[in-house]
Length: 220
Image (cartoon, rainbow, N blue to C red; front, side, top):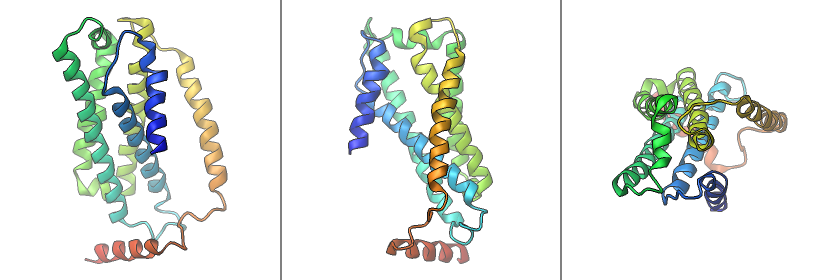
């Protein structure tokens, strides 16, 4: 509950506030769902890389990756639903203080990025995650998560940058260096703390049940 409130208010204070005349009742939930999608994509990618290691061999079954893929599919559809609902409400109301938010973002390179976001943020992951063979294999579902994480970065840049540049596309190198710097430090600390830790919570009773269930479904 705390993370939901924090991310909702942070999205409003950090992103929606850069357009003082614009407001949207869907913005907070849309941003929050996008963060949830990024989190599930990162976890799934991380586990897909560990699937062939001795630590997870025999524990992480195709059924577990399939369940993570289904969660990804759910958040992909949920994000598409909230994003389209926001667009539909603004388009239908046609208020002078609201429509510039999309007018800036549908022309030129920004419009091209909008099409890419629609394709790679919804349609491509949606159809890929419908296929059981893709969700069951660590290699294929790993590529799907990479697509989602990359397009999430593009979507956030598309959401924030047109406020300063209007219809003219401009990409500043600090947008990437900041991501690599802060994200790199976080990832380094994450991997550092992970070393020497038990990935599987061996003292939890539900873990053995999950492993047995995965083995039964594989054998079936």
